[in-house]
Picture 1 (cartoon, rainbow, N blue to C red):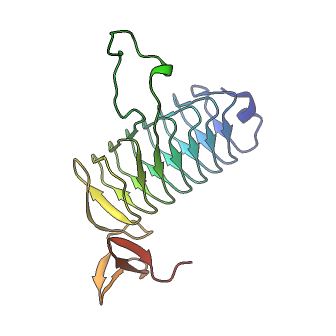
Picture 2 (cartoon, rainbow, N blue to C red; picture 1 turned 120 degrees about the vertical axis):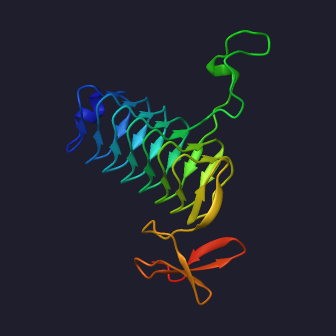
Picture 3 (cartoon, rainbow, N blue to C red; picture 1 turned 30 degrees about the vertical axis):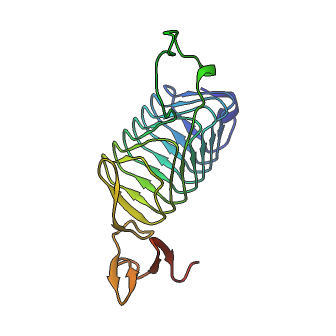
Length: 206
């Protein structure tokens, strides 16, 4: 449990969760059974950390993020507002993982430099997907379940596979866009997007 978070109003931390005293937990957030939130982690308002999930040291979650059961968010990951992390997702932090150094001695924290995954506003990472750091996931992109992301992902991209490749575009509603009269249109919201040189932009941004 945590001294600082417990004192906050409207924060729910169940008894079996392990939350460091130095973690900052925003109002309205909930941390569920067996989850661990490490030192100096920052969670915005109305975040949810599911059962058995791990939030690493100094990881930043923006407002309204959801980290589902047994997801592993290793430092120094940075998630902007409204990011969805599905069950058992892994955000890595070691480009060249080894348990030992070339001389056979055990690796310590001083023997490697963590690198992070950055996930921009509204993006969603499907169940059991792996994002291999360093990599950036663009705004409102969707990563299909079971995918392995090894390269930066553009905003609004729909990615799937091992390694993940772009299959199409999605809008803010998460629905695959359809092409109509030279534009990409969301069949659910009718919002329209324009593609240029592999980049998708909202036609009438808010």
